[in-house]
Amino acid sequence: MSSALVLVLVVGSDLACTDRSSSDDDMGSEDGSGDGPPAGDPGDPGDPGDQPAEPGVMYSACVQSSECAPQEFCVFPQGESGFCTSACLAPTDPSGCDPPPGDQGSTCFDIGLVDGRWVCALDCASSPCPRGMRCESVAAAGGERSICF
Image (cartoon, rainbow, N blue to C red; front, side, top):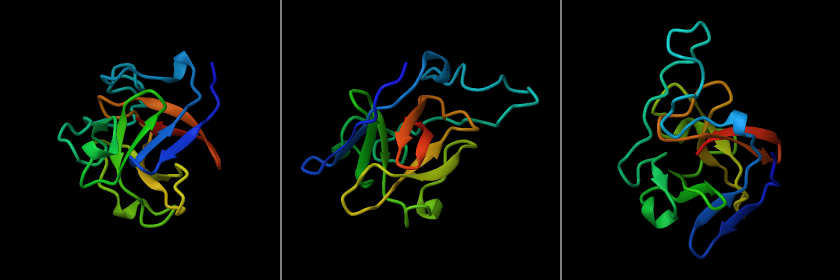
């Protein structure tokens, strides 16, 4: 089942929102079970780690940007919870992003900010999301992306 990508940035309340396209088969559970192969398998992508629980920490859960200070944004699929984040140093430079909680790769993700900045995110194309987050396929300008929410 797919849904169209709707990317919304509400400047007044500093919220970033996106619809995603996904099927029931490409989403793991929020506790991380079912995200990737069991530990010890030859294809084991590594330790997913845990989503940060402290408010305001990069990649911690949120529903609005006010919960994310000192981070700038709460990025989320429309109608769902998301994660706290800040802008990347440059659109494709995640070197200023906080380290991932597990073995995921840091990436920069275009959420349609007016000033052209992209935000720090966790790529789940080849690694499971941290426990507490879920991998969602989102349509982006450069094509489908797999991002942890």
